[in-house]
Image 1 (cartoon, rainbow, N blue to C red):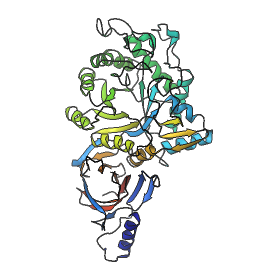
Image 2 (cartoon, rainbow, N blue to C red):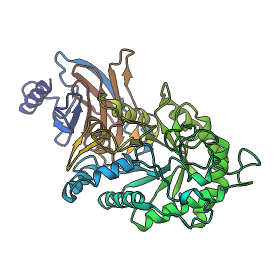
Image 3 (tube, rainbow, N blue to C red):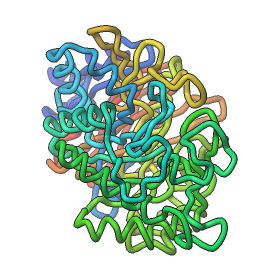
Length: 487
């Protein structure tokens, strides 16, 4: 079908009865598919006009590329830099690491510009679990024992290398647990009993006792330490998945009101006092409890301008982000975690497409890199089969399907691009369908990302509110990006 579309373009160029279907010289198309023979591959560009679908199934899309259709502004796309990522990346030779980072962070590849990193251990860390101030388990409210350690230093240095290649890189930091001595149970992991910050919330109120101020100071120390190593931290969440308390790996339960009070009375003021411009994003958990970030915003809105969402609700509904936007139109939203299991070609496409259609300014996959066993990871708990966007094998690396699916967005929707209103997306209950999202880019071009989950090629006709029509082939089970010239 791609050949047929190419032949049609050739006939149009030669004027063989297709005079109205002139090919726009600067239009282009790139595709990645489930079969793996397309990997950000250049394919036949769309033609201007109604085109000739022949015997292909047809589908109509529309976008509003005028100012009335402008929605959110893109911050970026990327993945989580975990200890597993840093450990495996550092196994590469310096030349291969440089090549990999250039493909990830520049326009020679995915051009990622938004990374989340783990503050201390996550489930994707080798044993033992750690934070930046474990202090042998003894209380350390003065932070005299604060130390990034080998793994924290290595992570900061890796992020600094990424920043040197991508000047627009934004970095989000999220902790899986506070230091054990700050918690009621005294440990990073191993029990769900009293798996809470010792901040007084469950007794006399947040700050009435315990370590609310030390908790805030911990973030200040961490941000400054990373900054000193060349990794500027643009934003933090104060707890990864605050409604998730498990014993097998670092977690910590934080109530919505508690989170709001910690940010408003401690973390926000501590960052301000230290002269740090690091933002604070609310929540960092699933779409099924939108009341949580609303509670945080209602109390701590002066310090919080963004909300972070994950994809693990039993019935994930990205429409929640549109509802949240309607109630909080000035608040930015991000999809900050969703896993990329092997064997599902369009998982990453779905968790990027859905949030973008619903006011998200960026999308972050879990995780960026791991070894062939999807690790290193802690010996118990958490995700043992979270495949990275990149798999490292010795001194070589392989990009997995999720990398290409995300790159179909990140490579063609740069920071500063404006998402456009559109219509025509639909997925049948059987699973087949077409989903799309478009952007107006800083250079005036327009990008249209089209996900085709049918097992057959389709022929798309796209109408723009500016008065154009574009038509072309979209390969089966693919994510395809059209780049249209400036109006």
